[in-house]
Length: 328
Image 1 (cartoon, rainbow, N blue to C red):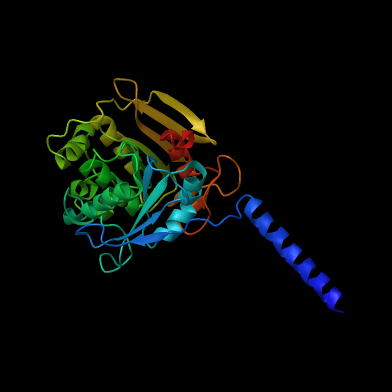
Image 2: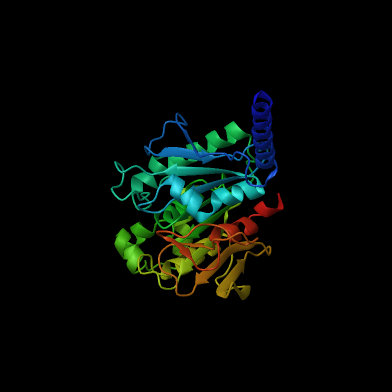
């Protein structure tokens, strides 16, 4: 009986050992990094919360992506649903995920329309800038490869960050968002969202230039994604974003490239030096939300959900390609 029991114990131990070895050797089974909240990242005049995602073993000198959620969303849900955390593990970069608080906005929207939150050195814009500085210091990030992106109100705040702190960001990605100063130009955030503001390209560009007086460049490049059936942020806002940022870059408003990506109209506007100043994706038939393409394919990322729309194109992946994140 003793030998039989000993044999059984050895069998169980062997089985456990095999399972443990398999767990370590099987891709995707190793322990993954987790979202962490960071406190004390600065004076935080906008009273935001800071979360971040740093893949395990991430070396210094890697890019940083700032991802701003939309209304009713939070940092964790947007980071996962948009695909940014998935790509961070795949390509090796860290992600900063600012989170709005209901005390600031009942719908958890970033206040892209409030003068006190969209000026350099003030409010929510200053809080996000402090998060960037903290992240770069903590992870030894590449200061020349910092990017900002966001959905809806987060897209509006992305334009704010590009205008207020152009020296911090190499490029930005706006999904169903608004031009910088749109609410002020239209006289109301709702007019801006539902109708648009009547401004020339130069007037739009002047609003950006006034946000950072005396700054001569370089300016962040911009990529925009917009659904043609979006009735929350009308497609005219993508046109206005194109006008605003082509003017800032000294480019005209005639596309240099017009083709399709995943079946959707895609345009590129180049500056006088031939560099991409603005890139646009018009997602035919899509409503208000972030384009995602769930799956395990090379170009796939994200998960479908509220304001995370499966349209067979993942905006985060396309942005990552444009920003060179896939190249290491």
